[in-house]
Image 1 (cartoon, rainbow, N blue to C red):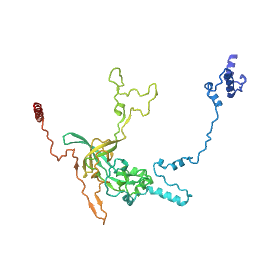
Image 2 (image 1 turned 180 degrees about the vertical axis):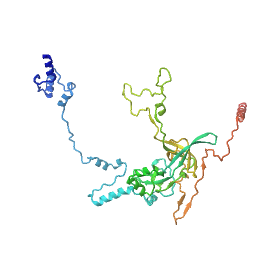
Image 3 (image 1 turned 120 degrees about the vertical axis):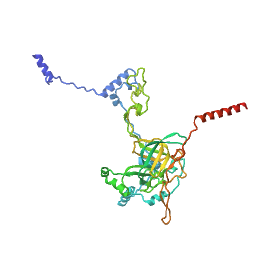
Image 4 (image 1 turned 135 degrees about the vertical axis):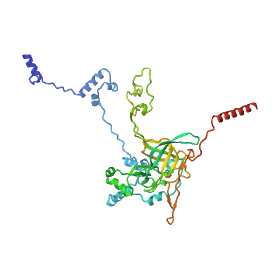
Length: 437
């Protein structure tokens, strides 16, 4: 009974059974001082030898005060980042506007707001014609920033097929139909006298007919198209161009923009393949088929760093979603141009599903036809300076590359096996005749 009562009292922690707590007045500075006296008695008077004996808390009390730099800045040294860039304007990457030291007035604010509004206004025809004439000549230069660069086109992938070359070998082709392309806007860079980063053109394709998507447009987005007098496109893209290749907003672009036998670059979004392993996604070899390998034939193998880092490195190739990314195919030769159907035939395969949008532009580093290329683009009717007379140019007809075998060309004939035997006999006779001489 007495044992159970004492246990109950202890469980409730009664204050009657508690002992008075004792408090210590020893502080860390006194402990550090005591240790120093002890080490000096043992003959360790060097300060560098006893530092590793101290704990982190003792080192805090033993630390040296922070020494502030007493060196004063000279008047020539920049004190702020603004002064640093002011003295080195080339570090900004563009020409810095002059800083006005005038007082902030209503007139100054109105001028700044007017400049910002002009960025969203449509560029006038006079401005573009002053920078880029309607007819020009493509200029080639080893340096890219001195070379003429035309705009690109937007098309739809219709499918794949095959044609034959002059030797009778089959070539894989892709048929692309140029959509209803038109120039939406033209932007000038700061270097060329504008307000944008690059000199580029926004090209749109087809007309947006989704009413739900049109209803979701904000007022600013709808006014952007209204100010340029263009309809919202179903697909649009930016193309960086040189200032001598600018076009007026609303200019129509067709398949005659490209020529036969030139090479183009094609961008498209690849097909989605879903979640795939490393062998299909990254073309891994996999594990061995036998000799101790069990149920890991298509695995990647070791991925960690072993005893060194003991962690998987960043961006390590592994299993995951494949496809659904922008891919570029460069150096694709144009084999046929059909202006009647606005169709372009290129050699090779183009990524993306059937009916998907693709972007095409000149491949300037491979056999670019700079002599008779339509620059800055092909005009069905070209205006001539004068009294408003027009010259109607004849559009091109269906053209084939000289590498491809057109259906109207004569059939390819082969001489057969007997001709090969006769040719071998003739070569053998000539060698024997030379040997006898």
